[in-house]
Image (tube, one colour):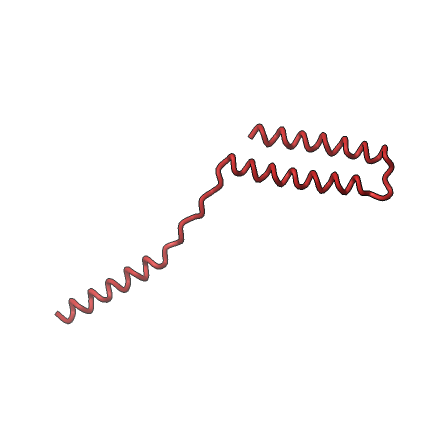
Length: 86
């Protein structure tokens, strides 16, 4: 009886320690639409920052600002188009 009790306690102790060593469940991955939405928000934020920097530049002329904004708008539209294709 003593051996049975000791072996039972030992078995329970080993099984609980083995159970405790399992990895935690992996966090859920974002869905495709959530991923696209976050990328789109990041893109909008970066676009607004760059636009603000161009418009507030003290040394750039109006023509330089216009050309830079045109290039920025083209780059922004291309990136948005790529996001929509995903």
